[in-house]
Length: 421
Image 1 (tube, helix red, strand yellow):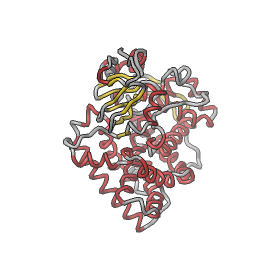
Image 2: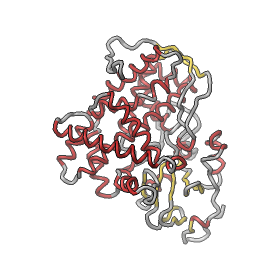
Image 3: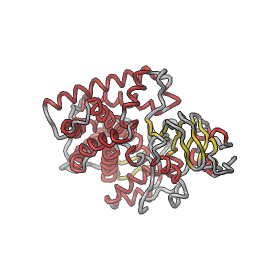
Image 4: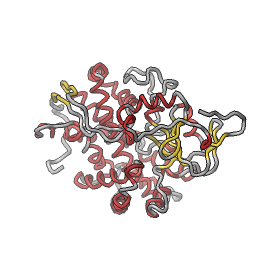
């Protein structure tokens, strides 16, 4: 590739950068092999919609820079005025004092005590789903348990009936199509309607919580916002919306990917089964090794410079999670799934003020599900290849063909799901 030859920054669009095609058949079959080939040529690659960062250190520079603004999607005003407005008022689009104010409200609602009180209910929900597998002719842990779990967890998080979480789950999954460039342009009508439905539902729940205060996550969020005159009702709605959206799809995809990694690494699974204290390590290594989603998106609002390269206003810059999480310059044996690491550096949930707002809840939900599996799986083995989503959206399994033997849950473990759930 052509490198900058002087101290003056070189316009990035004039450099001979390699191309990473994350929509190609090669990427679908062997994303990590293709990433390594491209990364050997440059830390930055051209990609379908802009430029993609492939190395951990440079990704951290982008994350720390105020010149690259984190965005949830790249929706344009001419595509949907409504969604463009919502995207620009979302938590991920904020910066400065507004972002600090909104995250302060989130930190109060997601403090360890509140999340800790939710964990027994998360465990009970996943155990109930495992129990329900016995009634199915050909049960699949991902399709029949993991798929339903994140939406149901919204029940105790929002303090709403489990029956209402099915629609929440469907709306959140549709809204998250905005993060999938190849798909969202053909589904904008569906996405907009799902966003309107979610907004109307959350406004109703917020009004009910104000009339009947609660100590669940949403109740704590409302209480904190009402005590802070700088938090507007619109910001409160955006915060509630962000918790729901981030917690559902992130948990579903990441849990499926982590389970697949554990199944494919029986020695690590045996270690976890023998030592429950390794569950947090399993969560973090799963996040690093098999990240949910494929990239995080940034827009350059004004001319920006990084590593001698100049990015013009409006340029989209993506951080490829697969690439940075397995950068050999950042982590030893990056393609090995190991629970004995001192740390698993990754950017799956982002970094700093723009890290995922639902990360605390996601980690707790994933940990409780993995713990339930480690307590109850007597044996399992993969007997086929999973059906999975496109690698450009993370490649999470939609099914996981397993032969497994499931043990009974503890006798003192409560059930929380009724037959109608």
